[in-house]
Amino acid sequence: MKLRHRLGSWFRRLPVVTRLVLAVAVTMSLVLTGAAGLVYWRVETALDRQLNDDLTTYQRSLDQAVRAGTKLPPGPSGSLQQVLDGQGRVLRSSDALRHELLLTAAEMDAVTHGATVRRDVGSLLPITSDTLRLQARHVTAGGQTRIVVAAVRRGHRDEALRELLAQLAIASGLTLIAASYVGYRTARAALRPVERYRTAAATLADGVQNTRLEVPADHDDEITRLGHTLNHMLDRLDASAERQRRFVADASHELRTPLTLMRAELDVALHRPRSAGELTDTLRSVDTEVQRLIDLSNALLDLEELGSTGHIAPLPVCLADLLDTAVAAHRRTAERAGRALIVDAARVTVDVDARWLRPAIGNLVDNALRHGHGAARVTAAVEDGRLRLCVTDGGPGFAPDFLPRAFDRFARAEASRTGEGSGLGLAFVQAVATAHGGTAHAENTGQGATVTLDLPC
Image 1 (cartoon, rainbow, N blue to C red):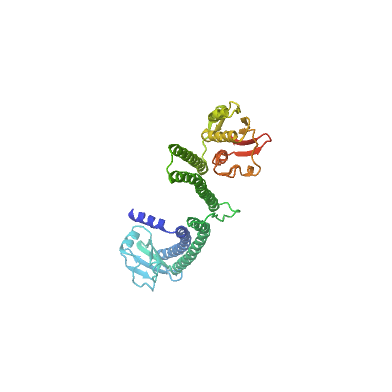
Image 2: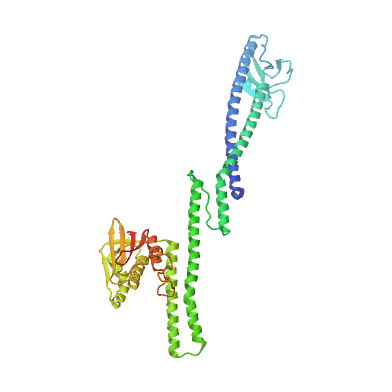
């Protein structure tokens, strides 16, 4: 058991190509051994049948001569004969044998009791001289028991079998070498794309960006599908790395301004003694910037969570209740500004992720109240399994040069970055729409700006 475990461990540590070649070699060895054994058995059986027929014919002619008391007939070339009495004394024998007994005492006893003895003298391998196949039977001649032994030489039969063994060994060896070579070349060719993929992955580990594996477009096998899967994984890794770089770049760029303002406020406050009122104003300004930093950090983290996971958990929710909840926090803002906030949605059930869609709607309403004029309107309708949600204001609309980049991160119509808002609201809206498998679209309608969400529901 331990030896088997050690062999298994040793085999698993070998390279894949070596394991495949060994498996092919072992399998082919078993197949060739079986085929060679079958061929050898068939040829040996045919040769033995012919030899036994010759021996039986010769034995029958000797029996007839002994019964008749005539001269023993000659047999096949190189054949031998011997006649013994019941006590095992040699009565007649071939000149080559003289008085050498061909049978043992046990065999003579068996023949005397009526058995027919047949056996071989000498072996096929190693090569021995004077190989014979003999057969002995008892015959009654003139009321006396006689033991008649007929023997034929096996030289031609053994030589043919040895030649067959040599040819089978050579043919099997050459076939095994050829099969192992073909298996080696096939395994190398099959695993060459895997090695190429490994090399490409190693370059990725070394920091090379935008790595793509060369996958043939006209193949559809396991290795090709592995290549497509790895390319998909590399795309995901590149996208993840790009999100991280963009997150760091955006965060460092946007955090620099409020931090600089806070440092300037504190430097001015510490430059000379200040009154309590001046310190309060400074702290309020710093508090505003701190809140801006908190809002910015939360927005960046929300965008990163949406982009990195992409997991949306749609659940049935009443559309009208969802919109009422999303705009509830903005109704007081609209009342203070003397503006109407209108929600128009049917009481239907939609499958969306309210956790993300609710703040997205809130961002659109906040933008409409902050940058638009007149009434802000939120409409939603379901048709053919899709939710179309629009937020419209009566303001001047988007600036023409801003509209193409309205959904970019930190994109703002005003040039200054010190104004209200972080420029992440519409980027968050688009991220929510994309995560739902939908789209976000901004346009000017002539009566204001409209942002539309088109989501499957």
